[in-house]
Image (tube, rainbow, N blue to C red; front, side):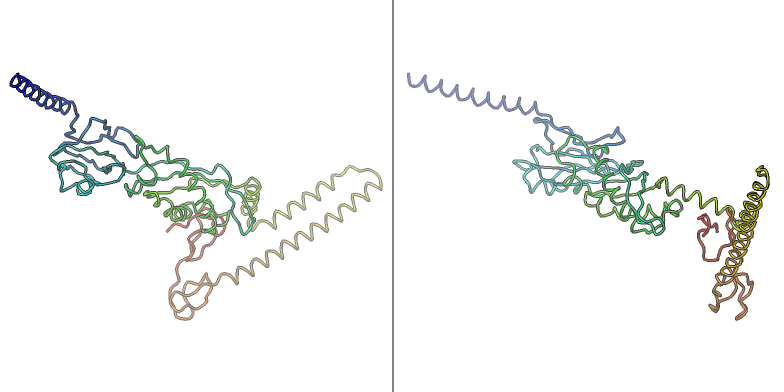
Length: 380
């Protein structure tokens, strides 16, 4: 009886052992063993993409990792960022996964499959990202004082440090889009825009002619803020800066005055003559009307004379200032000579030819890059 019981126990143990092995093999076959890991990006705005992994998905020995241009692959094990791969094709083993090896990604060496999260980071340039000031920014202008301005434009950025970007921004999302960063980046740019206006020190009247210079200052101002997130600003463009309506009206008036130029005195004389003509047409009757007309005529005549004298005096002062101001240095001996001179009277050096603004005709000095009257850029 004991012999029979012993045999039955052995048969039971054998069945249990073989059955367990078979069940283990079945469970193992049900696991999804990855042979190729790659991401074919079909989008235009995904910054980070997590490769889909399930509880039964494992990476097998010799798995092929394909990282395309403008991508980086980051392996994460138990919340720790491990190995990072740039563009290329890799056969995964212990040689190119040293950090995962140290973290114990597999139980019995690399001969057994292991689990890890794989993230693909898009390192291409994301272009035409828009920004704008929802509220006006303050700037101190030497002529108008404190004024409010609005600005908008576009910028281009890319991920320069995938590891820092994942640590500071990404977290554990399934994917991450440019829309997720728009609001935060816009706040950084608007804040930097106010700083750039103060640092550049460009007067309000000259802002339109210096968008490029102001854009470079803004890009430099934002450099450290973006690098804290592992992101680099490739290009920053200011498309427009709008001034308050009162300032724009003042600019329009000054433009009108500039169009008159040296004819301001003639314009004043014309206005005075028109006033005299209107007074002469006064239909007031009788001696009182004549007296009033005479008084008005005398008053207008005096005003006419005064306006002519003022215009003449202003023209004389302007010519005197022009004579004093139009002195330049000789490029050879540095002597102060008349700007109209063709040769230096001290050393005989030939002077550069005079340049004139192609827009308003103002005479320019040799060192002028922009017209002092209308702000037009001087062509070479």
